[in-house]
Amino acid sequence: MNDKEPRELRRVMGLPHATAMVVGIIIGASIFVQPSEITGHVPSVAGIFLVWLICGILSFFGALVCAELASIFTRSGGVYVYLKEAYSPSIGFLWGWAMFWVMHSGIIAAIAVIFARYVSYFFPLGNMLIKTVAIGVILILSAINCIGVKQGSTLQTLFTLGKIIAIVLIIVLGFMFGSRVPDHFVTGDISSQTVSAKTFLTALVAGLFAFGGWHMVTYSSEETMNSQKTIPRALMLGTIIVTVCYIMLNAVYMYVLPLSVVASTTRIAADAADSLMGRGGGAFMSGLVIFSTFGAVNGVILCGPRVYYSMAKDGLLFRWAGDVHPRFRTPYKAIVLQAVWSSILVATGTYRTLFTRVVYTEWIFFGLMAFSLFLFRRRSDVVHGYKILGYPIIPAVFIIASYAIVVNQIVSDPMESLFGLSLVLIGLPVYYLWVRKNVVAS
Image (cartoon, rainbow, N blue to C red; front, side, top):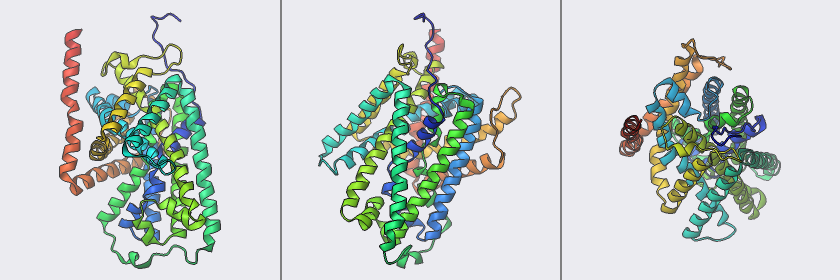
């Protein structure tokens, strides 16, 4: 190939790889660590199941919205492309801006630190060594993803498969050995607490964050074979698999532990394993969290650079960020850029403050993304490879849910919310300065 010809990404991801990406990114550490937040807000067995079911349905609705949009736009970039095409490049830029500086890089940093903390269960590590291990796993997985998307997606598939097998094993053994526990689904005094609409909404918000990441598979459209069909199928299959896993895992937790314990612990899966297997249960669950978070970090690292690659191609980021490796056909410079910033967030510890303040703003963009479906349905020049059967109800419900999360966050903590929103909106003057600079330069 002539070196002057533009290099393209390589289509190597099939349905198993894409589905594994959806499942592997969503199932990180939260379902093994802290369903206590939901139980604390909704202290009843039926209420807990209802929360997880509604969260699964809403995530499925979001996946359906993404599925239709992915069937329209086959460029890499996902949400960035949809917002840019529906509204303006400035809105797409804001998504990419928030992704790079906080949301996506912050997720990588946070999950990598959780990975390192659970490694310290077996090899006691101080705070500095925990950061070193976290940065190490980011750099190793980034290097693997630089070598090729096939290598990264194959690794993702293997770890997701192992994760699902482990979860199925927990469910089967939980109900099998849990029969020795004298009482099941014990609520105790905790069930007398009153559940208001606000506390139920707060529980839903916590549950929806545990489902986060379902949209990321759309970032790799240009590397997915027959993406118009593969990505919609992967989104639907993936969210269904995760919903079933989450509901069944919570059933096991409540089958072997009283609800008061479920509500108070921050290591729910380890406590459930200890009650079944003795002291070795905690080690088993710590190993599972290490395994799970390693796969989740890999998936997030794989997806993000495709957005920066697409932004660079559109002239909204440094042109070199859109360079494709001549041999491996990966956006290697964007991967390196992401790895460096995520490592800085780990080293400084700033990811905690930034991520917790900004993460809710993701739902503002999700609401806009869902509304864009109404705009694209009215355009005669748009070709839909897939259409939601439940239109317009499904996108409308998802929009309402998205802004309910945003309003709940603002009401609950107005100062923190304002700070987080300001961090995102700083991207607007940056965008206009960038555009002005490029116009003058041309």
